[in-house]
Length: 204
Image (cartoon, rainbow, N blue to C red; front, side):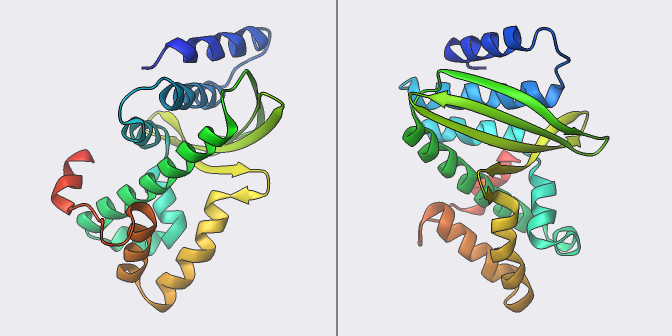
């Protein structure tokens, strides 16, 4: 776990929230934000690989898959197809986080609030400052093997699931899963740069 800059951000958050009840999903949101900052700005080698691992650990990839292509389609996929789909989606999220954090700059302060809580969904709002910029992210968490994992991310008017469903569902219905998977791979890695399945399957 990355702890240098992360500890500072988490320490500030815990001090601010000391008098309030902190939901585990709130802490997860703060930890992810702090760790992503640490990876991008610590001059460490291969930052995208480290971001990939953070996304893999914190996001509910199976549930995201079901939302993006439909539960029936997801449940009928071969293991190979699920692995390649998951890897492409995680890579797309990784690239988005990497370039967004680079543009935003180092975070100087952050806070988190619980917006909604139920047995199957927790919504957390995170606000942070970087220089003169103030931004907010809304995370939707779902339960996964005793933990809370991220199902969706909303930044301003952009919702990851809504925007990608607008693309994925019509392609699934009209052209089928193989065409969708090819398009996701092109977006994730670039045309002609797809990794081999044999290099991916051991990651999952």
